[in-house]
Image (cartoon, rainbow, N blue to C red; front, side):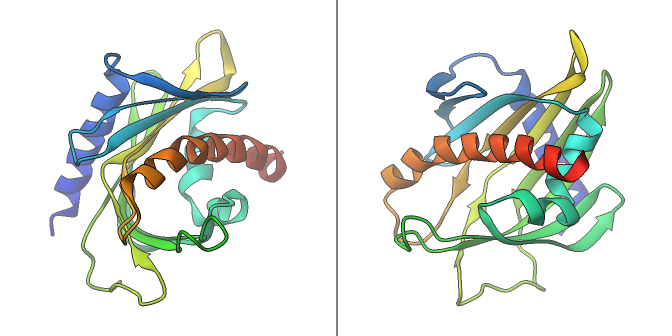
Amino acid sequence: MDYQKIAADVSQKILLYSQDTTGWKLTKSTKNVVVSWKPSNEYAGNIYRGEGVIEETPDKIIQFMYLPEYRSKWDKALQSYSLIEHIDEDTAICHTVTHSYGMGLISSREFVDLIHIKKYEGGVVTTNSVSVEYANCPVSTSHVRGHNNPCGYVCSTLPENPAHSKLVVFIQPELGGLLPRSVVESALPSNLVNLINDTRVGLKKLLS
C-alpha cells in the first residue's frame, strides 16, 4: 500500500475542506465552540466541522493532539491511543479505541488510521487522517471496527493574537455495527464540542 500517496491525497482533501466556505449549516453553538455540517462527498452521511480558539501556538497544539504521550492523558473519549508504525518523520499508522457510550448502548469502536502532519506557509499546521487496511492490526472481537473518512485538524495562528490559535476539526466517521445513522449523526456535534473543550483543558493542565 502506497502510504505516501494516501497521505498526500488526504492532506489535499483536508486543505480543501478548510478553504470551503459554502453550504455549511450550523448545528450546535456553545460559548467556545461552533459546529456545522454539510453532506459528505465521501459516504452517505455528513461531514462535521468544529471550530474553537485555543490559547497556544499551532505547533504545540497539533503535537498535543496526535502524540500518544499527550493524547492518551486528556482525551476522555478514548480507551487507548497508540502510533503502531512510523512510515516516515511525518506519517504514522495510528490505532484508536473509544469508550462505549450511552451506558453501553453504543459499543466501543476501534480505528486504524494513517495520520500525516503537514505544515503550510503562514504558520498553519494540520493533521490529516483516513482509515487504512493494515495487516498487523487485524479486526478485534472486543470492539467494532469503524472507518474514518478523511478527517483532521487545521490549526492557525490568530493574526490579532499570536499567542492564540484557531482550531478547526473535520470528522466524518462510519462507526460500523448496527447503529442507526440518526443515532450517530445526533451524537457527533456534541462529540466535537467535547473534543475541542477537552483539548483546551488538557493543554492547560499538561503544558502549563
